[in-house]
Length: 239
Image (tube, rainbow, N blue to C red):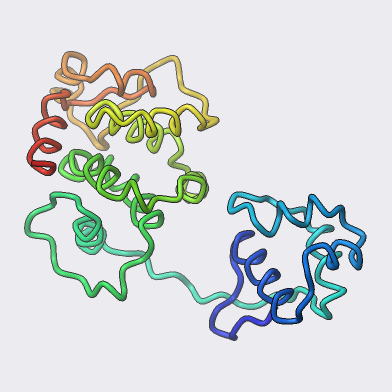
């Protein structure tokens, strides 16, 4: 796939970008690739231009053959899980008000979708991260690829948590884009509320019954943190 050995293709988007780059480098038009591969022209155009395209393996193989290419399996390096402190530092890089976070080298910070998705689980363990996440969503709104963010959250089993924070960010900012993106998530919401913060004490669970914001209940969560807590940090971070 004309990728360097240390840059394996790991997502459908990566694969399609590599395929399109190979096509362009060989001077083959999309229409000509469709003709040679016997894949419908509109399908080729959609797969090579739509960032959220999800190709079938058959279509990919059919388009690779005319370019003299094929797929191969490679051993991936084991990913290094970021520490909590590193995640907080990365969130700060993208605008979260997490004071005292270590500085990071900008060249080493992953894309914003990866950082936000990685932080969803941590938000259920650290209240300060939960309070800061809406600000990171808001400040990153112009560079966010929502389709990729959704996929990254799904891979981590955090789709419902993502829906909550998108909805919450909409409520705090007044930006309806986040609410619309939350509505696109296909996730089952339990009829019985579950504790957002883990672990919790008996006293925290009792307080959560009184303090849970309505937007959290909408997504099936109960939390010992009211809407004022989110609003105060969001206002400070946007003034």
